[in-house]
Image (tube, rainbow, N blue to C red; front, side):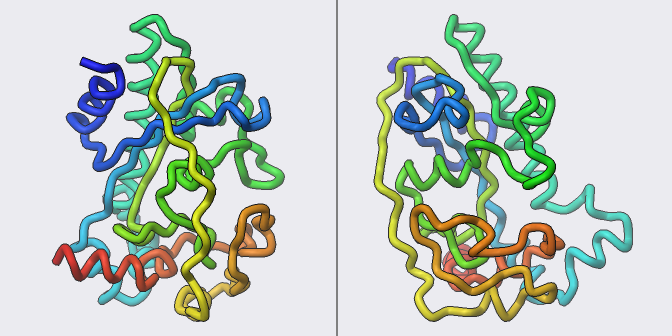
Length: 230
């Protein structure tokens, strides 16, 4: 069995909905940490969950107020993808390769999270762009034609010899849509269309964001995914 097939099977057995192997060798060393390849995988939010937020005003706010956030699907999925990245890094290491999990905990522990700017050298969505999955929306999230923004992703950097892809980032398809801008109650989203090289602060103010998820859920691409899978 090819290594790619083995890794894909292992990830999907443990809950991943999609897996991509991406060439990151051309990135700066600060970003790729001298690893030539990245394994990107993700899990999809359920259409039922998206529908629930669509129909429930202040869904996340109420979850926080009622101390129920640990039961939230998105919160749990973020934890699952992080733990899966840690697992896969160990899996690759056990096979004699070097690997670095880009889980939230590992990035923090290895000193690669910048608290002042609230970012990391190599976000998962940057690798997703290089995998050809989609573009960055006005809400600063990855938008995919198939799933909208209803994805939780994580990545593992590795020197394992993988057959990889490398695409130029897709052009934004947000157009004149302002739904996410209008839904943002804290005015964190600035309404500008992203293109490669656009700095994050031109898209949104991450320090204002309260993670209400409404921009994610009400994105027309996410709504389309929900309706197709309801």
